Length: 460
Ligand SMILES: Cc1ncc(COP(=O)(O)O)c(C=O)c1O
Image (cartoon, rainbow, N blue to C red; front, side, top):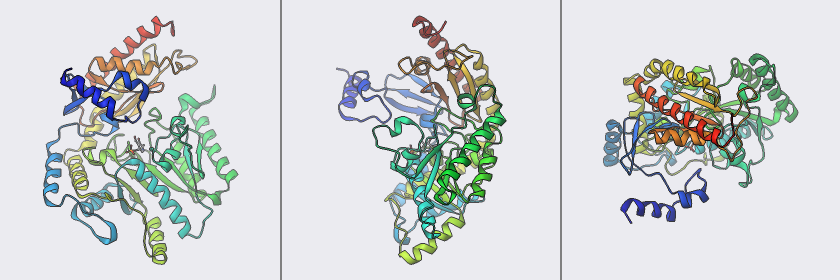
């Protein structure tokens, strides 16, 4: 047995793989990555792949940024761990909070740290509940999310997630979490409905839900500016403007989940800037540290924070936090990441290359398997359909999006099949030439998938 084969069987024997068909994995085994360089990763056979998903929408600066390694090493040798409980603090957490607030939407005034996007969203839910108790409104606790939303996997975050697989057999969602329409014109519009009519209808449905439940019971609404894991759903024109007016009218807090959109992905520092959002609470993770180390944050408005403070005066303590909240090494790496974004004008770079990315993406709309090409900035998706006119998807057993993913990987390009969509979200440092390489690989994947679909007589 070669050492690579031994690695594969050790993996199968010992690891539980997240978001994996665990049964298939037993005989298929893993794809093992060994190193990274710029936007590329290399597997244990020495094969090079352009990481068209930045891992999980997150490795914004690619896979070999020496400054982040140095920032981690510096902090590791100075103070490798300390905590923020009980008024203890340290420089990296203080500096990072100040820096984050200086670039975040003006509505936000304080930062609470955790390790993952899921935890940041759980913290958002708990803050909303705590806030409404402090406001003397114990019944105002329901949180509205959207179908197809992705907010993570911890108990509250998975409940907010609007994807059946995250609920089924996990006994979720928990109570007081509601779901409303997904703002996907492609998937959800009725025949003949214009985009404006569609938007009005689904915002009308949201208001009907609020009124049915009673506005005095609805505490918050949560949304990703662009939904990622639900298939890259870009909201229709006017959607957030109408939603925000509704939330204000009914005194409902707005939680904006910037875990994917935050730090340049949509062509502005935050998705909130791209779509004119005014969050009361905002969650970030992933590109906060360019994903070199795990760190997430829940940013809250001064209004919410002040009420939380007021209540802890009575309770004696704000009894929330995790051992690694604001971990100094993670915070130092995140701070260095934000400095790099600024010094290298990463948002400016995204704006410079995004038109080419979007042009190459949209050119694929003509492919026989593509029902829609959608995206903004450096995020996009191709909707895979077996019939463009009816928009009919392939059924789950004939997962053609996964075939596109696998065939593109054979060409050295990694993208992700998500049900009937192929998602693309490369490192923000990608160049125009690399964008061409990325889309050439995807086009190859589509052509090969078409051959497979035709051979199986799934399409004409
Ligand atoms: C929008 C969004 N929110 C939350 C999460 C959960 O983050 P994590 O996987 O770090 O818990 C994700 C993960 O992909 C996400 O895309």
